[in-house]
Amino acid sequence: MRTTFRHELDQLHEQLIGMLNLVEAAMGRATAALLDPDRALAEQVLAEDATIDALRAEIDERVLTVLATQQPVAADLRVLVAALRMSGDLERMGDLARHVAETALLRYPESVVPADLRSLVRRMSVVAQHLVSEVRDCVGYPGGRSGQLADRDDDRMDELQRQLYEAVLCGDRRAENTMDVTLVGRYYERYADHAVAVARQVDFLAGVGS
Image 1: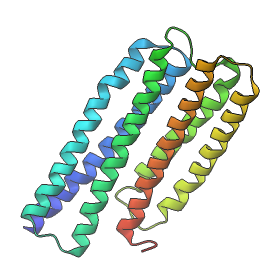
Image 2 (image 1 turned 180 degrees about the vertical axis):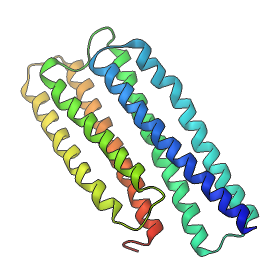
Image 3 (image 1 turned 120 degrees about the vertical axis):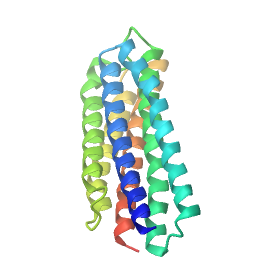
């Protein structure tokens, strides 16, 4: 029974890494479609969001099956609860990448982001991608303070969002343009928040701060 349980945990780990890879790629494509309007790329993000959703459903189903059949002890329950929380945050990150792609499509073939704000948005994307990379390195290797590492990038994201909002408010822009860019900034900021939440689950597995 323990061999079967260990196999299930290994499968959960692989699926979580798979979701991390998918949400990282999704935000990368969404950003590219946003900054250099590309309908095909944006539509690819929308289509692939269904894959992320399906993987979350598979993870949740696997966890429920293990709970029902393997009689997990307390330490095992910690892993299963963390997997459920991670899958939820990762699915939401996929949704946020989809929202960025949808915003790109909303104004196509025009660019949503004005030329003077492109650098800020690109920097937000870089921070988001670095966060996911950090989290992926930590998943499966609990023991450090992953949440604290992720917090540093999250602070950078919050500062970039503040700068973006200030730039939007100071400029003479159309109402719809102001709304679009403000929402885009929010999507990146929330994406980072969910990445930090995943990192905190790595710490939860290690018993850090508990």
